[in-house]
Image (cartoon, rainbow, N blue to C red; front, side):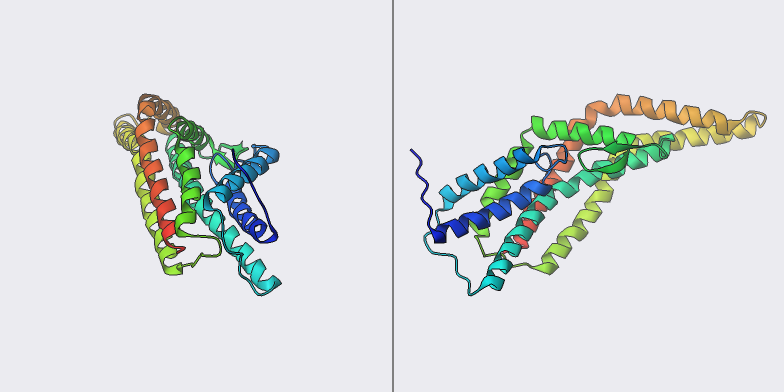
Length: 260
């Protein structure tokens, strides 16, 4: 049997927990998608906060000297939750970047579609890869890991215990930018290599048969070859997701380490 008892002091702790969890749910992948109903987000935040409150069970009241200091505590908890969720959500930009680069290679760079989960225009390939990676995130229970990371953050970052180490956070973002380009180019590499070989072949053919319009032929060949390579390499998506999810775990750990 679970008993929840609230006083004016412990209820303040619960509110601080709710602020961090709600900020995390607002921006985290899968949980914070814009097409997820707000009632689901609110319910998940409240019930998760109740579970975390039962786990940590505060014994001392929250210490603050006034309204301004209380507002600062609320702001710190909100930023903490946002940074943890942002560390996981930012890794989705890897597939968005690689999808945009693939569309530039195969000739679909001018075609954008609306992504309802982020309310922004993305390329067709980026949208396809984004949904496939999101599906793999659910299948591999990666969303449980992200939520567990939030719960475990209270072991090292208690309520009102956030200490922002800006140099460490900046270094984490710098390292991520390097990994973004490396992992993104790994995804694009099959299409890029094939497109480069096709450009060489078209260049030779343009010299051998100058009467042929290689520009018109090349556009169709690039699209056909690019779609064929994407179809052949679709089985490599689980390996691609391993790179992305590993980077997601590193970012979450690195961001949490920069706040205590």
